[in-house]
Length: 123
Image (cartoon, rainbow, N blue to C red; front, side, top):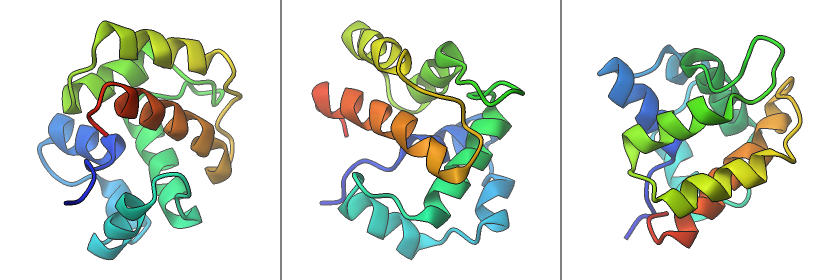
């Protein structure tokens, strides 16, 4: 059974009701999702760039690249309901996050979300 799909893509689809332009921009396909779902601890550079695009598109990052934690939680919650404990876990983890300026900068926030989802048993 595949792990839960990654929150960023589904949030974009849930909000927009159609695929995100980020998928086309970064040529993300089914194989990319399968690879990521097989091991969410090591997203590819391509997927990190895709997530950076999604963050910018859905307001999870501010114009200076800083993480908008409440928006990130809101977008995640639209895809998969979060418990209060998971929201608190994301807020705590986000205190350590630096700005998202490059694709690689997305990984720490991506891992925050993954950790919270795994903790609540929905990753």
